[in-house]
Length: 62
View 1 (cartoon, rainbow, N blue to C red):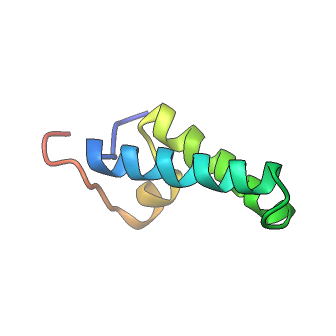
View 2: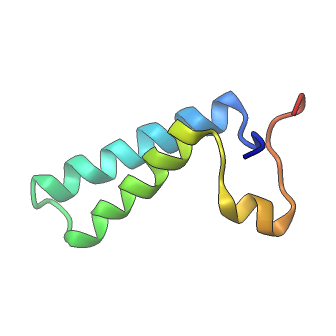
View 3: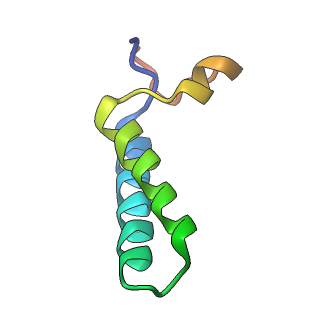
């Protein structure tokens, strides 16, 4: 897979995804908060499949 996420994009995905998971685990929000797993996974892989479908890249050097 070709990298298509910039470092700032990866960090935002990881922080936002982790926050959603924590909120779902503490029952602050509903079960839908576990969608944060997708954001954490895409940050870890440094690749977003939807970006590829739409031809987007947030990194300048990839």
